[in-house]
Image 1 (cartoon, rainbow, N blue to C red):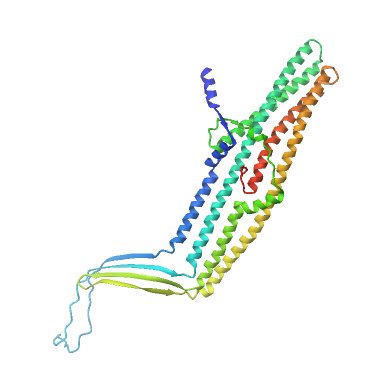
Image 2: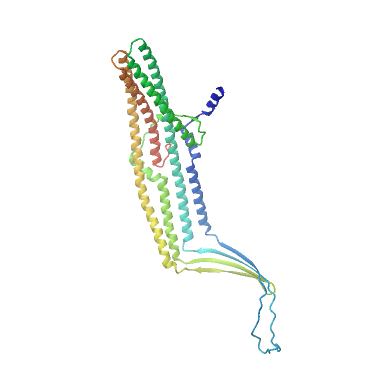
Length: 435
């Protein structure tokens, strides 16, 4: 039994965790952010690929051939020769050629390609920046999710604490009523009522503990911690309720700071550069070229030092009637992104308005529930005094006790929800709550 108890204690290791530590662990272990990092690396590679198009293309090739000696029967003879082959002309003997080797090296450096290379690099730069902004936005969302999970666990733990305290009160009340029932001071029906409430509170505690265990497990999984770690949260931030700006100020901040809006603006600039790339097909291409050729055919001939250099101009006449479709596609994409930008602006204003109203509502809820806790405690005190003086029923006393418990839970929930809503407002504006 001692060994089992020791293992249980070790399995339920406790860890003090501040909100900032939770955020750091959430960012470190977020699989979503790791995917975003991979996308950023991919965008950087695409940018480098676009830049590499400015470098010369170098092609080297070579062949080695084995050939047989063909049978060559010359039917035509030289002038002045007779049937016997006499005279001044004679048929030369075919050289013995059984192999051939040659190598070619060419290099081409683009000088002008209708702006395709330059605009391609520009487009890749905008897309790479957009990907980085997407990663920044994902980071902000991970931070917000971590904050929400942190205070969701706080709510679960607060519920367990309050219900446990209420259960202790209920157990003491059952003992008191049991003694009074033995002495004939209360009816058995009243004893059954308080025992029933004790059972209901025990069930509520089981549900609260189950919810706390599930929430704790999920949060450990999110943070990359051992699933059996019992987290002890820092609640000092619950008492801070900063003053907020006006709704118009929040909208302006969001439109100028949201990473997703900046990312979409960069994609729109990339699409504009893409239109220029498509239009580049209407122009000819100019390049500097150079080459070298070497040939060796034994018993026949050898070519060395065959170097060439020059300027090449090419123009695909088909682009006059084929490039138009590509240009229209690029222009349609640019137009689509422009409308997406307008839609996003409306979405940002909706997000800000909702986050602002939610936070304002939660601040008001804190004030209401704070008064409700005072009223519930006072109501229970008065009802208890009345009951002790036989001026209130057992049902009145139990109802007052339930109301006191519910008011306490609602108050703790309101404080946690207000902090989450406050950070959500900043996240909707593309800011950190510490800024």
